[in-house]
Length: 145
Image (cartoon, rainbow, N blue to C red; front, side, top):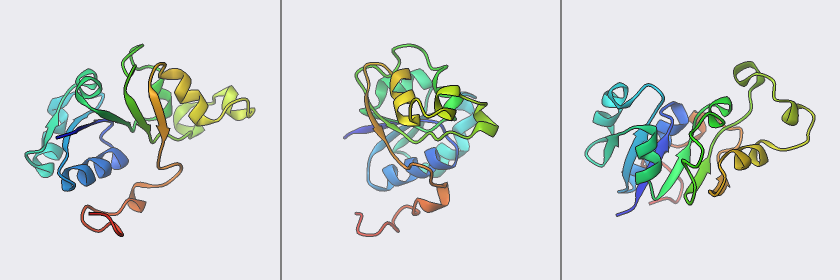
């Protein structure tokens, strides 16, 4: 059975984890505060979910959802996601991420910037500029089973 690694347990990361578990996938989820901070979420997700470190989410996931603030992506350990299918949900919010000159002047897109920060990964941009409430609750997706 495939395992989805989720790095980031905020609204979008948690919503994706719920959908993956509802689809019968194993999920390993991590955040910057450590696995112990995720015990409530993992209990809610059920037996297919485990709280792990960021490093283990990257290692154990067949695919890895990257759902952390943009400014935190560049701080991930070099090579962490090399060879992985990375599904990136990050968006640029200058009020949270600080100003990033390359984005402000249009030299690169957010996707190009993140792809450069995760060398060797197979990169996919997903959920571009949506809010977590736009992701349907598990079992309520249109046409998804």
